[in-house]
Amino acid sequence: PMILLFRSQGLVYPQATFFEVLWPRLTGQTAEPFNIAGLVLFPYFFNLFHGGWGTMSVAAILIVGGIAAVQRGSNRNENAISSNARVYFGIAFLVPFLIFSLKTMQGARMFVYALPFFAAVFGAAVSHAWSTEHGGQQIRRAVIAVAVVIALISNAVSLRDVRAVRSTFPEVIAFTNQQEDPRLCAAWSSTVRSYLIEANLEGGNLYRFLGHNESPPRWFVNDWQELYDQRYPDEPIALNENAVPIHTLYHDFGRIFIETEALPSHGDTIENLKWVRTLDRNRVRKVLIYDLNSTALRNAERK
Image (cartoon, rainbow, N blue to C red):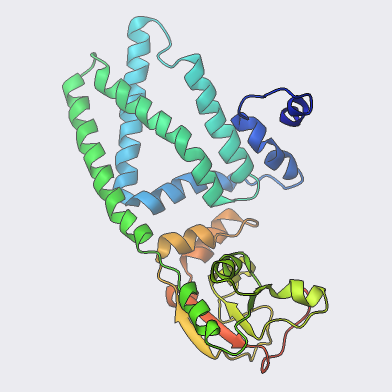
């Protein structure tokens, strides 16, 4: 609102602050109950992306750096952590954890928003551990050097999973483009829509067509996005239970993608984490194409 107020008066307002950008998300979720178990999400995602050895190494660095910072402050009779740093640490806690962990468990968003602040904390820990002269500086430097190397190697191993992610939607578009009617629809259509636009083809959200009393495209595609309804791709909520796909393809991704994307935004955090970790990877990777000319719809509205 303040940005709009300034611009309505012809004034050039500086870039929005972090709180100003995220404030609508906080106010939009005030009705949601707090879920203290959400505090486990950041370490969970950090371990998922960086591996167990990387997580333990970073934790060791934070502990050693924190002890060094306390020693440095006590020896100089001053606070080793500046007021500006404390503000950033406070934002790192309040914004990602309060909004995206304790409220709706939007784990991927929480992780992305918290990472810049966590990087600042990590950098401060390394700096204090490396530069503090008291209490075994050489030992601390050796521990930090080894821990950083282990963390980098562990992260590189985990990155292979991220770099291997490949979508099979280009093959889906190629398949439907060979048909007499190349139009394509889906219950979760944001991804499909981007590929349709790129290929200059028509289609989109199944429920938009039904809502406008229009005949939907002949081809319906379903993939991992069905997990948002806690169903596998071969259990499309839009189609009858006996629906049989005419063509099956597979995305290429691993546990990092599945556990990041499929984590429910509501419910019990611990139970949701257990659920997402037990998902069948091969079933989740399926991309199924159905012919709506021979498949009955379950209902006209999303449940």
